[in-house]
Image (cartoon, rainbow, N blue to C red; front, top):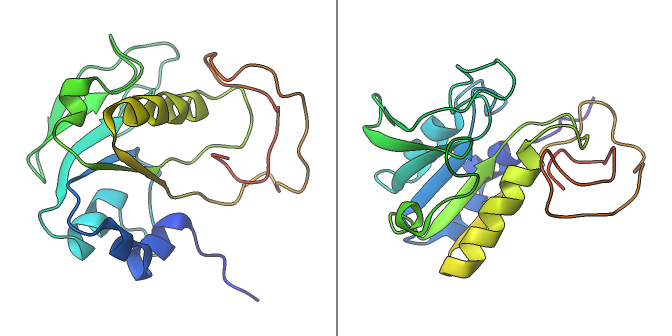
Amino acid sequence: MSRVATGLDVFREESWKQCGKLRLGLLSNQASLDSRCAAAKSVISEVLPGRLKALFGPQHGFGGEDQDNMIETGHSRDRELNLPVFSLYSEVREPSPEMLDLIDGLVVDLQDVGTRVYTFASTLLGCMKAAGRSGKKVLVLDRPNPLGGHEVEGNFSSLSSIPSWDPTAFPCVMV
């Protein structure tokens, strides 16, 4: 049986080289694990020691601690890495210029079910817009859609709405 490599697995093996000397931020959550069950923040810290400067969390929080729907999450600090954790589901829905001042590039590793009803794709879009305005790089570590991803369904309508945009289903989880 062939092995499917996630974006995080590919990052650990080779894509990290694209980061040069960039100071990095990471947008992820509790499901951001590689095939060895290592958290994305640990993988990045291992292959690029000292380069991770900020963590960003989507709806439900960086650690998935706020599972109630529509509950905003506050900013915090990661105790393990002693890094700021900025919530992108709080008073802001995309990184502020002050948050982005800490980094040169943002790595995104979010798992979604590849449908428009989740907010993660719109959070990614907000990050890409903010990064573009600030001249920051974005690297998306995508994954195959766990629902199969063989078909694209729905219409392409708006790229600005929360929870997300159409289509209703797509092949990779963050494309």
